[in-house]
Length: 286
Image (cartoon, rainbow, N blue to C red):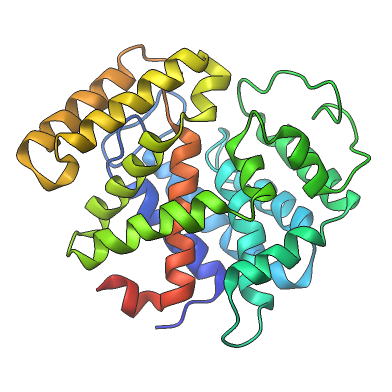
């Protein structure tokens, strides 16, 4: 089955949030300010805006997606995912037949404008993520005067999602998608494949969502714990699954979600989207 970009985005969000990733919302595992159902509603909400990604700039699609999300939930459930999926959706919708998705994405990112940046700044302010702080140049509280790609370049040293824009989604294409494809080819279920991909990404680099809210030391510790879980076997062994459960409990014990690897979850969703777009559901499901 060939998926349009809106349906692929919705399915990517649903597959990501439904997998029991340590420290994140999943079925039966809620946060005080966000339940699993909020993420389901958010996935449904962004389908329309992302389906129209070819008809408008990246920034406008991001703003429309966050506005649609705000109509179904009062918490920030998907800002990072939308920031990643909007340019990917536009690239997928505009690429020529049989052309490379990443090449199309490179053109989309290079073509972003100051208006795109203004729309994204407005979307970020509306979503109101925690721990943003302030920046010396092009602060999110101000109106930007540079293109969206240039604004992301200024933030790339402190934010992984901004770094994805600058590197043409290097982590997504070179680490996330291969990990997911390998897991699926090895016969892992979607849940297990998503968790394994998430652990692969988290163990490779500290999560900047954690770093912003809890500090770089905590982010580094969480990444090392993810590496330890992988070394124990992860989803592929009984010992690994015990380590996964202990890891999840440790990330939740404070009760304030400071140790939530939210950016890694967003990158995982982007990898799922790329796999669905490039392979189609029938191929990706096997």
